Image 1: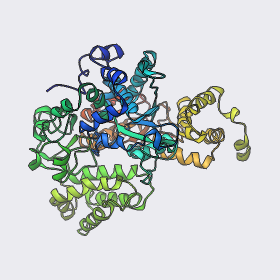
Image 2: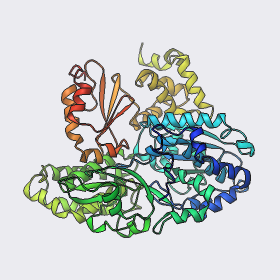
Image 3: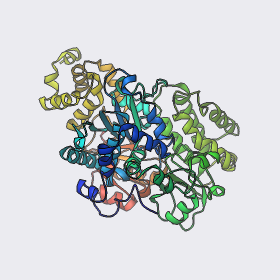
Image 4: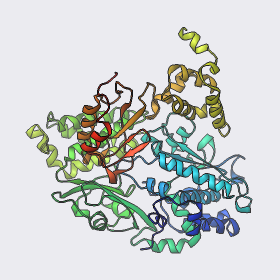
Length: 426
Length: 172
């Protein structure tokens, strides 16, 4: 398979600087757009490409952009493009790779995206802990300003764009796009009510697009090589390639660029090298901590958004977390719920009070104090905390996904904890 | 100085000219002053290690917002410290992939070696131990950050190498 997003990664030990990036075809998409494509042309190519958001939700990128009002349909002022580089979904480690190893690819994608939506200011909202990526992006931005790729009149096109790196002060909820916008405005990162959607009223009340790192990294290639080429990259329903990752007790944990629609079995058994000696696969979260468990019976499914959705889970970030037969499923769910309870912004009751309640029930079960009625309590919590519409945002429903599917697939483990008054895995 | 006097004290007597200049540079591309709240907290913390009450009040005055509102922002975020921390902060990942990789045992080893639990600082002020959500290096789990450095593939031997010579004991 042709490497697209990772073509510059691993060739040299050091990250690609501007010279190396351009030598391998970098900024060709930008040069093409600046010399011969209107924003409308770019919008059409991205819409045609069927690119879907790589941050977890899988929303069609072209459609998201199309909701930004044109200049004649909104009051004069700034428009913003924001890169969501706040990679914090448990078990997800793909955007770090893209930013640390090939910062210019992201920047080129952002310039093209900003040009398409008519943005004049852009931010990279990045995890405060990603110090290496922060430094490399800042170095790359400096190179771009010096080379006329950013700032006033980019490549003589008349188009101007400023770009800033904004390290986050750290909260998972900042990954939610309206919470991220509040954080960029210097506020507590509570999500906002929608509508209005950020495309109409986002940062400082102005039209704003928030896209994930990996999504934006696809844009230079789509602009340079076209929508039809992009659609041929996937082997299933979805277009393009994707960074897939595996962590847990496998021989070769890691992250690889593979075609969309690659079968799960191929990812786990070939790329991740299969389970380590003495460990069996019991289940897995297909795309980060807020996705439903799947099990061995799902290994032949393709990693496509709708295929994984039809199996009762979500492709999410595409980075899988493996549950092995010697790791306690109750303990694993407890770890996840503890995380989500801690990271709740505290705005709405089901999340602020419901998640600590779930954590307490799970901790009681894990530590041998569980009662038979606790299983009904957990099912009740899943029903009411997990229902979209009961909460202000998707954090709490996301937290319920691993719990509800653990109750479905590993119910006997929960029962055994309660009947024997201890964790059988310890 | 009484608390009310402290609140009234001139911003310049608390924050240095350099700190104020850095905050003002952020204000250049932000439409209203309180929009720089998080940037300002981070600037002060980068210089001083943490954000004291005195600094928080001075920043709030400089940004024309109430100290209470800024405190609400400061305490919301994991990486703003409202108490003093040691020379290096250990951000210990306790999320799912590191948990599967045995991070609970590694955390116990760190606590036993340094004599500190989460939220505590070693007696010699070298380290403060804090939990952190997933650090995005799950293929190299278990992991943590020590100061600015990511340390991967943690095991007991590595903990001993890193912290074996630190004087054991907590200040709080």
